[in-house]
Image 1 (cartoon, one colour):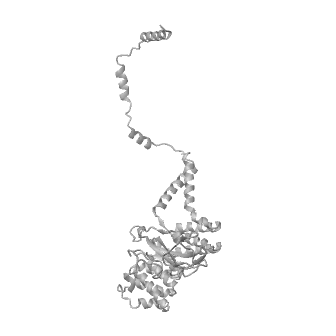
Image 2 (cartoon, rainbow over the protein chains, first blue to last red; image 1 turned 90 degrees about the vertical axis):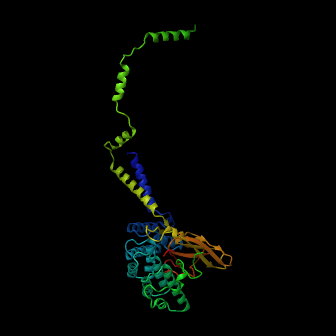
Image 3 (cartoon, helix red, strand yellow; image 1 turned 180 degrees about the vertical axis):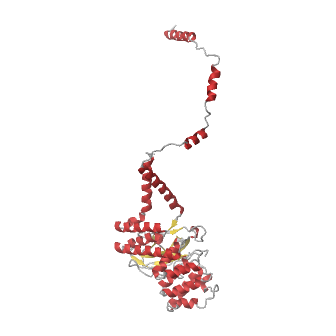
Amino acid sequence: MKRLGPAFLMLAVLVGRSEAQDTRLARLDSKVQARVGALLDSARTLGIPTEPVVDKALEGAAKRAPNERIITVVRSRFNELVAARAALGGGAMDPEIIAAADALHAGASAQVITALRAQRPNVPLTIPLAVLADLIARGVPPDTASTAVLALAKTPSTDAQFAALRDEVERDIAKGVPPAIAPSARTRGLPPGARVPAAATTAGPATGGLESGPRKP
Amino acid sequence: MHESDEVIERVVTALRRDVVAFAPDFDARVMGLVREEPRAVPVRGIWSWMTRPRTVRVTPIGALALAAGLAGVIALAARNEGPAVNGIEQAPPGTVIQASATQMMEFVFVAPSASSVAIVGDFNDWEEGGSPMRRKNQPGVWTITIPLAPGRYHYTFVVDGTEWVADPLAPRTIEDDFGRPNSVITVGDATT
């Protein structure tokens, strides 16, 4: 036993180090590393995904942002993830939490995310939440975008239909339709369970772009 | 006769003279004693050794180290259970998003005058230099195909190693956190 004690102690130290340290963080300044490490510990404790926090820190380092800016942005990202998880409730998957955090970051309210979960308790919300964030990013007011997404969520819509809604709204905006009314033009008079956007039958898994953006080869 | 032969002869004579006589019941007594010994059954012996109570002396630091070591082993096992693919944790059982839903996504960027174009983002840890894109047959068209699990990723293009350019054909993030805008790609699940 006397021989095993130091061995277990060494094992514990090694495991603890591997849990606490992410080799990718070596790219960060030591002060930033410590702050990010503390946030990662909190994220693990709270059960929220740690990768978006790491990603944001690495993005800041890659873009040569000042240390204080990196810390501020990473903390903000962490807070959004915490709020996203709270809005989605227990059992939320990591991709959903990340998409919800993006929606919050874009300007959507936590209440909308909670309402979306209530409408679709057993269906992944990654794409609907991503569409919500994308619509707001395209200039659609958060309330208008939320109304459109919630309206479509009331129907048994697929992810492809949500993606199609976004693509159609983006197309309308590109044609000159004001962002504030583009979604309502697409969702007006939506009978429950009946509306299928025109592009839904051809739309595959959602992508971030239009015809020549990122796509499946 | 050699001298060694004489020595041997003397030894043989002495041995013949001092013959040890065993008692007639010698064999029976020996076998009786053997039968009285408990039978050696290896499994029962090990079980007996394992179940026999005994006192183990452990120092407080030793006990702590043992507990921490066991906790570490459990933590390591737990880390290996849920593989993460570019930050997208494997979904719990019973959900439709699975690791097998990873899809090949092609990124296209048009930069006729560029000598090199790379893509950096959440999916390659914003690695310095990123993932280099290749020229397609058409002049100025750069492409790369990246496997992505369902999820939402931020990315941007780096032209000639210095110029950061958001994808003009993809939605940008609403806020520019670090002074250089990102694009966003959301990969859905083909089953939903």
